[in-house]
Structure formats: C-alpha cells, structure tokens
Amino acid sequence: MKNVMIICLSCLFAASIAYAGQDIELPKTKAKIGMDIMQAMESRAASRSFSEKKVPLKVISTILWAGYGIIVESGDKTVHGYDAMSGATSRNRYTIPWGWGDPYLKVYLLLKTGAYEYLPQEHKLKFITDKNLIVKSGSGGSGAFGVIVIAADFNEMPNYNEDVNNVAFLSAGSASQNMYVAGAAYNIQMLTQVSIPKNSIKKELNMSKGVEPLTILSFGSY
Ligand SMILES: Cc1cc2nc3c(=O)[nH]c(=O)nc-3n(C[C@H](O)[C@H](O)[C@H](O)COP(=O)(O)O)c2cc1C
Image 1 (spheres, rainbow, N blue to C red):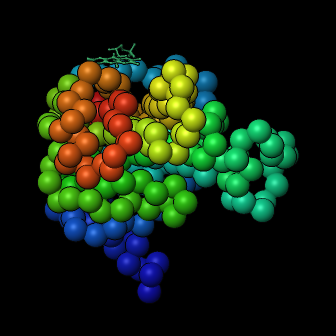
Image 2: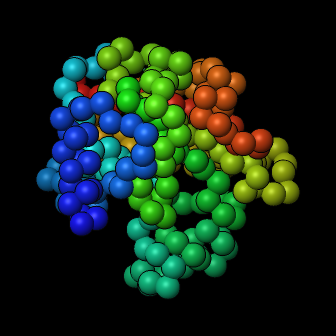
C-alpha cells in the first residue's frame, strides 16, 4: 500500500498537479543514469533562465541525494572502511565529506507548491509550508522550477572558531557541485547564489537559532 502511495505521489508530482501539505517520500536514486560523469561535468553550466519543462521527482531525488545523500548506513562496510577522524563518517557515509563532527548542513527544497526540508536519513521531503518561496529566496533564475537552499547548522559545530564558517561553506560547495553535476546528467542547469535575503529565508523556513542559510541553487530544464 505504501508503495502504491509513493508511486501515486510521484505521478502527481510529475504531472505538476498542485500538491502540498504533506511529507513526500522520494523515489530511490538510480545507480546509473546513462551519462558518463566526465560528460556530465562537461555539460555543467549555470543558467539564469529556464524552460517551462517540468523536473520529475526522480530527478530531484537524485540531485538532493548527490548533494547530501547517504551512501552507506552505519554498520555496513565500504571498500575504504571508515575515517575514524570524523564522527559523521563513522556512522553514515555521505556523498560529500565532512570536516566537523556530525553532519552540519541542512538542505531545503522550494517549489511553487511549497517548501520542504530534505531528510537524508529517510531520503524524504519534510513539509514546511505550502507557500511559494522561490521569488522570496532571491532566486535570480527566471522560470526556475525549484530552488535548493543549503544552510549550516552551527549548533552541530561546537567549539566555534574562525574556521567553522569556512568549513561550512566548503561543505556547501561540495554539495552544490555534486548537485550541479547530477543535474547536468539530466539536462538540468542551476544557478548558485550567495547574495540572498538570509533573514527572510530563515524566517520563512522556520530555521532555528544557529541555523544560517549559506547559498541557494535555482534549477530547471533548458
Ligand atoms: C560561490 C559562488 C557564489 C555565487 N554567488 C552569486 C550570486 O550571489 N549572484 C549571482 O548572480 N551569481 C553568483 N554566482 C555566479 C553564478 O552562480 C555562476 O557561477 C556564474 O554565472 C558563472 O556561470 P558558470 O558557473 O556556468 O560558469 C556565484 C558563483 C559561485 C561559485
């Protein structure tokens, strides 16, 4: 029954029927997309205007996973084993490396039909609001299908010193680049922006104290 529900939600999404108000289970990401990684890197490009083509949920699922997904869950082994230096890596191996204890990024998805937080552990979207926050996020991509907001949770980065901000931005950069490349494999382009209305984003997404938006990525087909 749960599978049927997930399939139905995916259909609704693909058909772009206004759907909001609930968490969304994301479809599993595919191990292979069909484009070579070097080709995907070659076709990566920023865009400031997007076509009206819909971006299917499976593509969004892959992009979010590429930027902040879990590859190997705690208890499983990878060929490399674990990096004992990082608490995050010793529990779950993510698609990006961590430089400071527990995973300290938060990733949000803004669509015309509402805003969600991406939960990597469950690989699902947690509903926040049914408001269309795309324009309010400061998106400079005209006609963007959606916007991904990457924030740092400084509560997960104790012993603050001047490096912490750099570490958070570096991780946001790793996540952004993975998303760009995964998107490129599906003919999706993006636009990275750091000049964004941070206070308004914080407020609209109910970010708690210590959580700070770092960057947004507008995305869409071209
Ligand atoms: C870290 C970073 C921050 C950026 N911030 C902004 C921004 O706030 N506003 C903007 O219009 N472009 C910004 N850009 C530039 C665009 O995202 C994009 O990289 C640029 O247009 C060049 O296109 P290309 O990436 O296809 O070469 C930023 C780029 C990077 C890498």
